[in-house]
Amino acid sequence: MAEIVDLRSDTVTRPTPAMRKAMAQAEVGDDVYREDPTVNRLEERAAEILGREAALFVPSGTMGNQTAIRVHTDPGREVICEERSHILNYEMAMMSAFSGCLPRAVRALDGILTWPAIAGEIRGRSEHHARTGLISLENTSNLTGGTVYPVEVAEEICDRAHQAHVPVHLDGARIFNAAVYLGESAAAISQNFDSVMFCLSKGLGAPVGSVLVGSQEFIEEARLVRKMLGGGMRQAGVLAAAGLVALEEGPKRLHIDHENARFLAEALSEMPGIRITPAKVVTNIVTFDVGGTGLTAAEIAKRLTAQNVLTLAFSPTILRMVTHYEVDRTGCERAIRALRDAVGRAARQTVH
Image 1 (cartoon, rainbow, N blue to C red):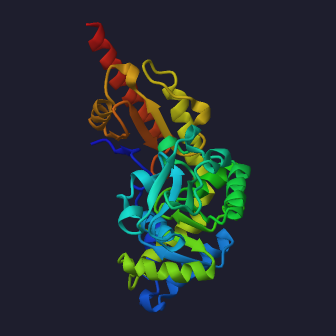
Image 2 (cartoon, helix red, strand yellow; image 1 turned 90 degrees about the vertical axis):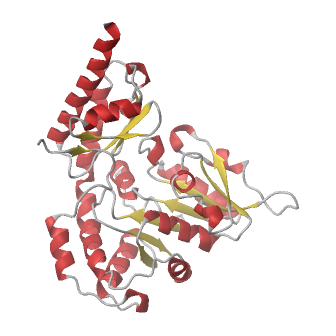
Image 3 (cartoon, one colour; image 1 turned 120 degrees about the horizontal axis):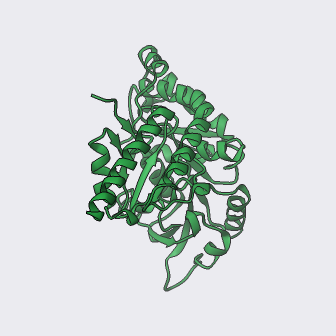
């Protein structure tokens, strides 16, 4: 059986040999008592890399984002976010269910909000409207194809929001991808945010976990919220050990994933019935419209699966591929050949 080329997401990666070794040798303790030395090292290192006072290891990015929302807001407030943001579309309405907040969704070109787009949505004290409690940005923007916030755009949003006494959270699930693309450090592109969440289990390759960073006071409150959500783990150093390897080694090779994504995009742009703008593929996420092929995205995904190439149908016409360290250039070439075959067969069937 041919090896599977799994392009559904960068969450599908398995731990590297170095991660498995670190996990096996991890020194552990009870993290709820703050006695797990490996978790403590991960949190200290994450805070150092992001230029923050403190950090908190959480099981998932969703828990990290929702913890931040709970700490920053009060029930009955609004959270301004882009219409296609992860916190709105893929976190089970948790900001409403847990924090009592209402999303104020704003659509922006390529998922990148600007201050002019946000300014008109800010709501102060009123007897009729919910007050703005938080602004949340996502970098990179998943549902819009891994797009990246220009540093000056994010900084203006933070500066103007703070003038309005509104905190700003960054869903930086793939912040290291953004940093690599911009040629900056993750700390430099996120320094003005009140809190940042980033995933260890996406492009960085760890099997489990995310990290929330901020001020010491913010993290102390976040620790309590994490416990409320059931995220108080015990001998979690086994997981944190893999996270440490991911944090130190993962960012060094993300440029390869970006190059492979652009390779896919260029090849896709030459296929009949497929619409994509390769210049917009700047990180490791490739989304493209298959509406012109005569097949739905789900039908194409099924045909690809039959050839051991896994992709994700985002809508009836949109298919997504995400590059990561377990898919090399050869794997990308296999995916392109499989897609050409799937689209070509559809075209031939239409002719006959």
